[in-house]
Length: 148
Image 1 (cartoon, one colour):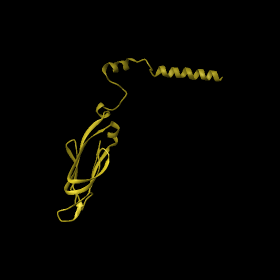
Image 2: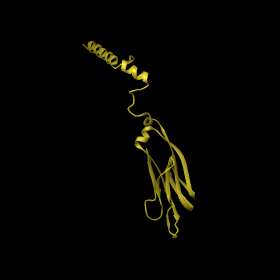
Image 3: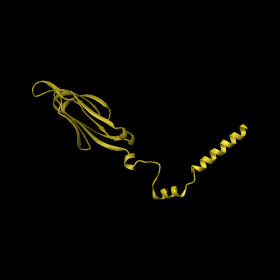
Image 4: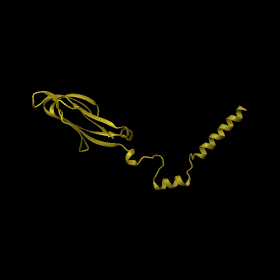
């Protein structure tokens, strides 16, 4: 009985492999291959490829301040203002679906009225300014953007 069940399972497995087209291609599959098309991906080619973005973070003002940023990695630096950091980010199709956050948090600077406040900041992606914060004592004092 056990041997009969094993043989039946083996025959069923071979039948499934044959039915699924392992090795042999039907006319429709051959026609797709001749046209250079494939049914393996439902995404357009442009969405399934890596994409590179040119990202620029900027912090305005005068003097020295600290800057915390997330571009290619998270970093904190003591800088002389105005400050600018540019880098190319290459995202996979999966990263673009989820999104990747770039950000800059400027440290305090002396404002024109003598008080301390956040320095102004901005983010530019592929030449287009996507976020700008004027800094000061009011506001969120953070520039953050999600790249898709």
